[in-house]
Length: 260
Image (cartoon, rainbow, N blue to C red; front, side, top):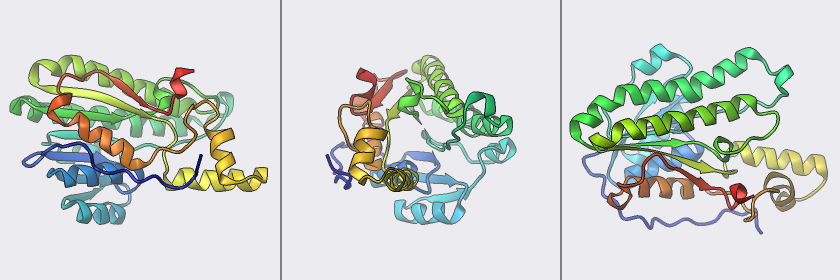
């Protein structure tokens, strides 16, 4: 087992020329990888992130454009151009606390960003997709959309809600050529996760490899972090013609975590 990054080549053959896409949380991590992968496939990508400068940098790489938006602001979300063929709901955040101590305002904020904003974006994007007879909605859920962990009430609740929303959209959109699916990764190599690894290594007096294997991924069979590009490659597949029959699914990318 290694804590070092794993190279992820583009293996999915998909031509998205003439398609448009919107990726939330696109300024870094999974969102960045997804925006770049869609751009590489020929899509024109709108990169949405709270950090406008980060969004602009990714948009420049992807050949797209950027918007700086706080997804907790419903009015700001409603101002986004959502006449797109692909929606990737990726933006999210975490707060850890026991339920009895969980700040109500933080719980509400997480639901706005991770449940209400995806609903608003999908709701406004569907008419365009229906008119074109094609659309792909990919919700970046989590292993925590399928399982729970203590002290993560807001995050687990939001991911489970996103799972339900995705399935309803799958049922309604099927007759219009629109699919909706969730990707459910375990721990992905992002700046936030890397900092958590470093902090835990220091506090426990162990190496980064041990933190990943024995603490973070204790329930997974494959003891390594997921690369953002692995999530993006699965996204690419879900946008390809062979995946047209996959809808309403929750695809675990978790190294065997949910096999337990």
